[in-house]
Image 1: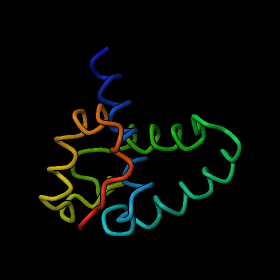
Image 2: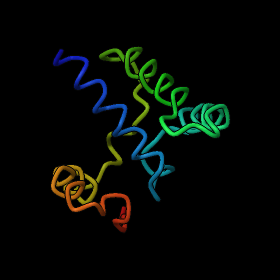
Image 3: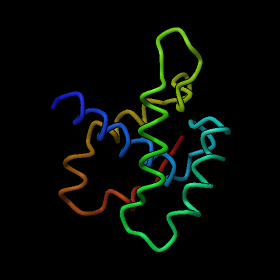
Image 4: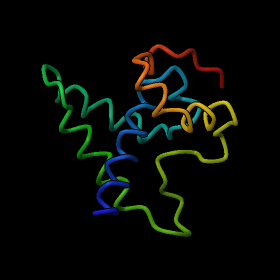
Amino acid sequence: KSEEKYLNENIMFLLWLYDGNFRKEVLRDTFIDALNLAAIQDEGTKRRPKMRKFCRDALNKMQQGADNCPIMLQKLTFNISRIISLREKIEKANFYHKLPIVA
């Protein structure tokens, strides 16, 4: 159960990064391109099943020592980390998606 919960949280995080103003800053170009194609297939849907499946598959394919993480971890800044750590409080306040991003 915990593994599935963390996987779903990471999927939400990837989609949050993708939807944010700084996707090109922290997501790999190949991941963005593939997610753009999935987004086209998801047009007209609310839950974005193709995009979620692509994120799930990308996360499941990650291996230690391989350079296949969709996020360029070295590019994450304190500002992004701080916003992520406050996510639960921000979501409860219902303005999570309106935050200005400074990367």
